[in-house]
Each structure stands twice: as C-alpha cells, then as structure tokens.
Amino acid sequence: MTTTTQKNTLKLYFFITYFVVLWLVSDSLAMTTIFQEGWLPFGFMVITFLLYGLYYLLPAIAITALVGFISKHIKPQSTKPAYIAAIMTASITTLLLYANAKIFSLYGMFFNGFILNLVMTPGGIESLGGSTASDVGYALFALGFLSLQLLILWLAHRYYTKHLRKPLSFKFLPVSAIVTTILVHMGFALDSYSTNQLNMVAESIPFYQTVSARGFFESLGFKTHRETKLKIKGKLQYPLNPLQINKPAKPYNIIWLTSESWRADTLDEKVMPNSWEFAKNAARFTRNYSTGNGTRMGVFGMFTGIPGNYWFPFLETRRGAAIIDVLQQQQYQISLYTSAKFSYPEFDKTIFAQVPSEQMHEGKAKTGWESDRDNVTDLLSFIDKRDPSRPFFTFMFFESPHARYYFPPESVIAKPYRDDINYATISKKKFKDDITPIKNRYINSVHHLDMQYGRIFNYLKEHQLLDNTIVILIGDHGEEFMEHGFWGHNSTFVDEQVRTPLVIYTPGMKPLVSNEMTSHMDVIPTIMPLLGVTNPSSDYATGYNLLAGEKRSHTYISDWDKVAYVDDEVKITQPVNGKSFVLMKASKGNDDALSNDERKAILAKKQPAMLQLVQDLSKFFKKKETKSVRP
Image 1 (tube, rainbow, N blue to C red):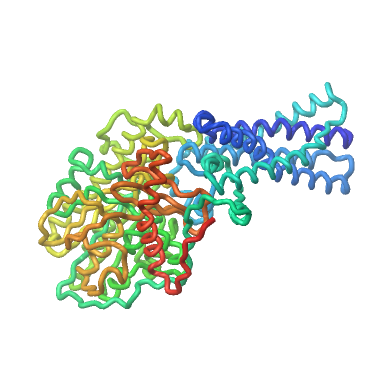
Image 2 (spheres, rainbow, N blue to C red; image 1 turned 90 degrees about the vertical axis):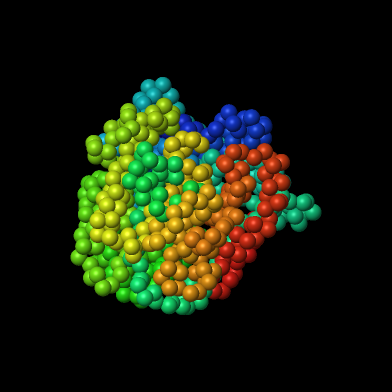
C-alpha cells in the first residue's frame, strides 16, 4: 500500500468518524428548546456543535499523524502503526463521548473534576454500585466501539481504492476552523457583555471554552451586563476561637445514623414503620435541607455545621470536625462504621481525620444491604463490650438506599420492581418509561434500612440506654426520580435531591414536630451544648440550635463547584472560585421556573442575601481575601 493511499484512507476515515462524533454529542443538545429561544442561540448552537465535533477528534488525528510520521522513518512501507493508532484513539474518543453523553442525560453534568475525583479516589468506582451485568455491558460497548472503528476504516479504505483513487483535499479546513472559532467565541464574548443569552447553549456543548471580553467592551464605553462570581480564598481558621467546655457530670452517649440517598418523603408509617414510631418520641424536622446534593458535602455539613465549600480547605489541611475533638477530650469510646468506604469521599482525611484507623470499620459484604446488616451487628457488639463507666460515640453510614438500591426478599413492600439497573444500557427515555419499578426498588431498599434501624431501637430499649443516649437519624442527601428530568443526585438542587429526614432524640425531651426550615448545619449547634461546649455556636458553625427554638430564614447547599442560596421564595445558584462558567441561576423556592423579568427582579431583591452568602462562605478563613469579582 502506498503512502498516498494510507493518507487518503485516513482522511476519509476521520471524516466519517466526525459524523459519528456529531451523533454522539447531539444527545446533549436540546434542539427544540434552543430553537424556541430565537435564531441567535440556535445558530450559535449549530455552528459551535459542528466546530467542536472537529475539536474532539483533534487529539486522535494528531496522535495518528505523529505515529505515522515516526513509523515512516523507521519502516517506510508499514501502514499498520498509523492504522492501529487511528482505530485506538478514535475508539477511545467516541467511547468517552458516549459515556459523557450518558452522564449528561441522566445526571445533567459532563465529565468534570467531581467525576475525575470519583475515578481516581480509592472507593470511588465502588460507590457507583455497579453490577456484573453493568460490567459486561461496559465491556461489550467498548468492544462495539472498537469494532465500529475497524468497520469504518475498512469501508474508508475500500471506498477510496475502489471509487476515488485520487487525493482528498481538506486544505481549507484548518483556516475555516480557525476563522469560525474566532467568530464563535467573539460572538459569545459579545453576548456575555450584554444579555448572556448564549450561556444556556454553551452549557450544553461538552467542554465548551468560554471567552469574556467585558473589559474590552467597557473600554470602548459600552455598558456591560455583569453578574457576581464568588472568589473565596484564605487560610482555614476552624473553629474561630478555642472551644470552652464544661464537661457534663453525666455525659450522653451518642448514636449517629446516616443513610445514603434518604429522601424526606420516605419517612412515613408505611415505608419506615420503626423509624416513624421512634420519631414520635423525638424531635422530627419535616423541612430539612442537606448541605449538599451529594454525600461529600452532605455529611461534611452535618458534622461541621458549616457550608460545603469548606470541604476543600479541610481536605488540604487534614482538618477534622470539631465535635470529634470534643469527644476525644472527654474520653469517649469511639467506633465508626460505613457500608461504603471512608476513603471515598475522603472522610478519613476530613471530618474523621483525627480518628485512629482501628476505630473505623468498613463493610466487606458484596451488597449494601448485607454490609448494613453486618455493620449493625458489629455496632451493637461494640456497645455490648464497651466500658460502661465511659460514654460512647458511634456513627454508621448505611448504603442500602444507594443505587442500585439493595435489599433482601423479606424487605419487599413495593411491586413491581426492577430486578437490576444496568448502567451500561440504560437511557433517559428508558428510565422515564420504567421509573415506577425503579422507584419501587428504592422504596424496598429504604424499608430494609428501616429494619436495620429497628434493630438498633429495640436494642436501646431492651438495655435501657435511651435514658442517657442521644440518637440522630439523618440522610446525606435525597434522590430524584425524574421529577425534574434527572435521576439520582449530584446534578441539581431541586428538593428531591437535597431534602432529607432529620430526627434528633435526646433523653427526657418533649416530642416535637417542626415544619420550619432546617439544615444539616443545625445538627452540630444542637449537639455541642449537650456536650458542655459553652462557646456561642457562631464560633464553630453557621447553624442554629434546633432544641432552643432558634429558626433560620435561609440555607446554603453546595456541590463540587457551585453553591445555592435557598429560602422560602427562591433558589439562587452560582459558581464558587470560578470553577464553572455558568452564571447565576434562579428558580422559585419550590423549583418552578422564573421568567427573565422575574429572575432579574428577584436577583436585585436578594442582593443583601448574596452579600451575607459571601460573608458566611468566608467566615472561617483567617486571612480573608474574599471578594466579589466581576467576570
């Protein structure tokens, strides 16, 4: 085979693959919705879509060209290295784009730092709860994409040698791509200084690179449209002042039970009869908001009492939660359990950083429900074998309600339910059509969670431990079942993803049912005074003491790179530290959409609240370099 034949075969091969790429990426584009926004957003989307399809292939093209160049000088007549490079790089590219489209379809996000952290951190992949069927599906898809690229190369070679036999010229393509790139990004920059009409479009293009020219337009005398972005930096100072403790004469034991993906509306007498009955003698908060739409920020907020954006400096400095310091100072016997991993999210390097590894126990069973059952057995054994002369603190993270939603046959209360959820083959449409049996699977898993809670409640009653033991029941976050177009969590701040049950039992308390807004950040300010901490809660939290009648008007919810301000009227979401180009988003407090005029009016009205947000997100930094900057 001649070098000319090889070059032209590869040109045709990548030309065909380009259309495969466009097909894969098109799944994330809401064509009809954007068309209704007007010709400018739609035209911008079409041009950018076609342009970025080429960008996605550039690494594969470059690697193939480099391999071809090297092999040409080593073995001039060999065509295999370049063909192999083309097939492998294009297969990987298309497979990643397919996975990216799947992630966006179900979770509303593209591959980002959060997903990279999930892949790279020990325990991250396991946290997805995959199955053998899913693993087989992934392997078959990978084989399928490889086979597709082999077929395309064979067709390209056959078509060129049989029908074309003349050089293919794309000499104008590089210049056209460069010019189009400049025009597209100038258009985005021009729009961003005025209406921000194209931000929604750019958000749907995978890995779109933004360009802002506000400074340039302002220098020409134009009045630009600006929205505040949060830039928060500084050295962590947590707590603000050393904790002052008057050790109680009879310190309370504490049992802290946290469940994965525990929706607020599942705590009822049908799905969770044991927990419902227990809550009748405790304080139950019906309108509780997590500090995150994922496990990381949700658990962090409940143990620290501060917003989730502090996770990153805590991780960087290996700072543990202040409540653990208090427990250790008072010689509590500590034993922690999880049916997931303490390494993912990195709780062993944040909230539990000061806890010795021998006091942290991870479930070893194959499924979440089995690990939950085994861990409860171990937890009760720990209490049995404790030193009765010293108080104890035990924490358990339950995994049963984590997708794929685990439960044994005796926990089935909702039918029909899906036998399995195959991540490799599921699609958004298929998920919508099958949402009832999938949600029934979740309900069965929550019922199993309640059965495990019941074992603990019965033990406490039988051993008369409720007279001196605080019990906390809480979820890390909620779980959406397509109520707003997505499944699971970690994607948006809708109520289904961020509201959880919260039950706090303290000995001798009067039962309470509160319909006021509460937050995970309120747990620590509620518990710390019971441990003898005399500091004002503002020294170590941004929450309120729920048992002292304190009320909140708003709360904050975080994910990997954004924070949401939430009150009765509105939810306002914005990026933190420039990790996302998406500007402020706003919806009604009940997640209904706002018109453009309503959005502008509510953002203007909530400016004081946004200033308070900046203060609270920077409160626990010693050297404040916090400022609102204009992009």
